[in-house]
Length: 327
Image 1 (cartoon, rainbow, N blue to C red):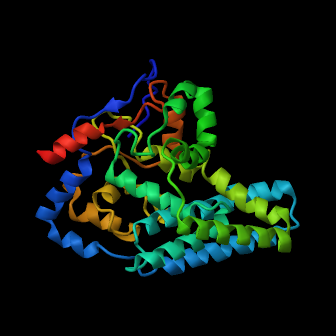
Image 2 (image 1 turned 90 degrees about the vertical axis):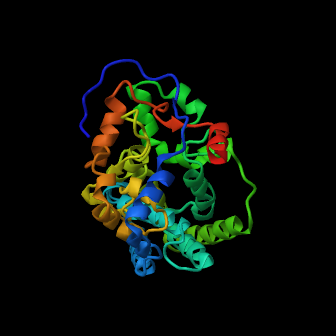
């Protein structure tokens, strides 16, 4: 998809759909023609090793920088640590679909482990809301991936969109807690306690600079950063006829192939390491869909295109969803 530098006014309402989200119907069509795709379902046997390697490398880097200058910490955080922490964020996404172990509780424990270098407890809470994003894609007041009305009122021009991109991780994380708060369960307390213990241990043993490196890696990696382009590319509507977009660029190698987002929503039980095979087996279902080759370009398009903003998302009402299911 190219950038056309569109002029004009920003939308004042969401794109409203009166049909179901497209993934369930496409899944049925693909499986009817290519039932062998079911052989791709199931955990990634190397997930634990990949996650452990990144966690240990990032924690070691944090301890290594305990006496570094703040300038060096910021540079390493942006050009190195941000990639590792964003990788772990997307590992947690993978684990929310139980794609490391067949036993769900093992995935939850691994998610808490993957959470450690991120610095802020989020693994368990993320799963609760993310699965609803799949189940109720675009459904008003249920899909917390869609921007809030407050965001649509504040983010109205190039400057405010730029600030929003820098802070988008905060909006992404805090939006559901304000719009649809859920009472924490025992697993949230476990996640919080283990994360707090690790954070305190790093501060006590290595100092605030080591801990700050981890937090900075999370913050800059979720803002104006190439990997963070997937937050926008996945569902922000640049083509009114399409609500989910895939990215087929090289950063898939570092992001658990989350770029294969149409394929992921079509088959959330297939691990990222095998999503490319879906497109190889059933290319005719994806080749005519708009897609991206650069997440950095997506961020640029979002900021500079005056017609695109927080309203550039597809929404549907719960009543439409219920009606379609009853027919």
